[in-house]
Amino acid sequence: MTGAMVWGVGTSDYGLQPEHRVEALAWKAIAEAVHDADVTPAQIDAIIVGSVFGPPGVASRVQRGIGIPGVPMWTVENACASGTSAYHEAVEAVRLGRFGCVLVVGVDQMSTLFSGAIVPEATDPEGASSLPLPAVYALQAQRYLQEFGVTPEQLAAVAVKNKCNGLDNPRAQLRKKAPTIEEVLASRMIAEPLTFLQCCPTSDGAGAVVVGPDRGNPDDLRVESSAMVSGAVWDHRTDDPWGYACIARAAEKAYQQAGRNPADIEVLEVHDAFTIGEILTLEALGLAPRGKGAELAVSGHTARDGAQPVNPSGGLLSRGHPLGGTGTAQIAEIAWQLRGRAGDRQVDRHRIGLVETMGGAAAGMDGNACVVTILSTQ
Image 1 (cartoon, one colour):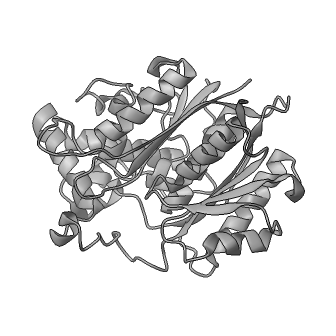
Image 2 (tube, helix red, strand yellow):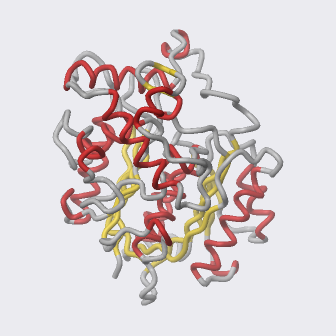
């Protein structure tokens, strides 16, 4: 066995790009990642593509366009965690010596498929009850408002923080203006208490990561851990809100593998498809006790100049959320932060970073899947 390293990263721009072919978004991210890794196509031993709504054969179309025929290639679908699930498989393949250099691609083009919320699966109880994901997250938020005294202003503070961060991300979808808490709360109600500015936009985009063994390059980032878990039964036997336990299981494994604890982490990119999502995720990751996660943005703890900056990229709320292309974008952001190359959004402390991506709902489960990975400089 050998240690896995992140050799290179790249992304496309994120936003509404229906004029581009879905594979063209991937090609842009791949070109940047391969150049960043300083590898040739001949050095790539395998390709793993994470996509949720990509057309059948999307991985083959990506492969054809980059001129790397014949190598093993497959597609992973794990809802919002598809990109990081593909990355996790690449890390394991390198760690076990199965492949020497793996190209990971996460991509989706949502603008050609949805004009609003993703339509839930009709055969699931959520679908039959007309409960799309905004409503599922709204139920989380309602519980936190009632059980822990979380206020609408605390929810809105997450949106303000991330949208302010996104102004300094030239690849982010939403960069027009940083809203105030009052403007967030006054925006159109989507699923009470979540307003329009507390929900991620419909997006197109791609990210790519090149994973390989330790090659003695000081620019490469060490994969201290990568943990992936699937959802477990979520019913009357648990007091956990939906999604919490899935994230907590992945986090526990990741911390254990890395020999780390939550206090060690210096910068994070987490799944903030909705404001309550960041709050609940940070609790599940151990940055705050249950019911106290809403205080982190308000106190400045998770601000870009705070003790543990969260989503300096702007997160899903600003960068956008093209499902399969989200996890790879998160890894790219943490790589840029750890290397000190994040430009105007660079955080001060940047030696150890964490990425968390949780895949959305399936009936009766506490999430489809979750990946948590910890990266560090050498």
